[in-house]
Image (cartoon, rainbow, N blue to C red):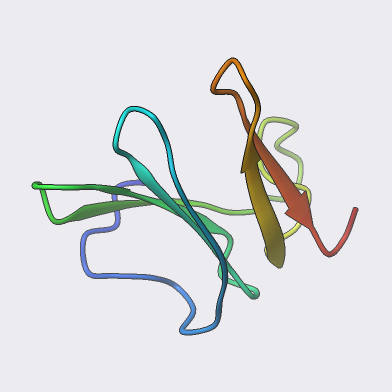
Amino acid sequence: EGGRRDGLASERVHSLLQGRDGIVWIGTWLGGAHLYLPGSEAFREFRSLSGDPRALPGNAVRCLIADRDGTLWLGVQEG
């Protein structure tokens, strides 16, 4: 589900990254990944969805890394 405004889907935060654009990415244990738009107080949630090839492969996000081009890479427990 996207557009969540009330916070994170999990209280266990495993990774945190602020991109060059100011967006804050949050990786949680079994709650997927979230982005936070500073100044808007809005969160957007990204989770694993069965049958959706564009969704995360798993909801246990262990690490977040941005490469030199600013592309975000996520590492999940499930691979």
